[in-house]
Length: 168
Image (cartoon, rainbow, N blue to C red; front, side, top):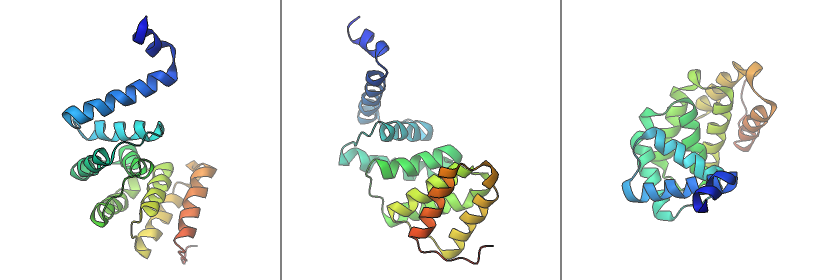
């Protein structure tokens, strides 16, 4: 069986090998499109793999290029992966993704709102008071579908921002 047998037998090896394959493909050919970018970053973040600084810089550049294509899960994956991979996006990148999240709040699911909001805050995005209130409103509209951990993450993020709202 050799390498193929090990690849098929071990789920850990399987994921690690897949991650290495993605890294190799990216290094050689670059990302193919927005879905491949978000999926690759999400996979690497879940494997707790921290790519080189050059790779992370290229990832941020590609993510900036594809930002308009992202909604829902892909938006949450890219922002969360940016945090988990140790990327250091500049203020313009952060503001563009924060604006993207605010524009899409009505279409985002509760977990996507909480994960994207928390990751943007931890990355250093500057959110206006009205934007934070909009996030709270969108999340409250889906409270029945939100898990306790999604709710806790959202509220912890609001607390870290020391945001006091006239929220009812």
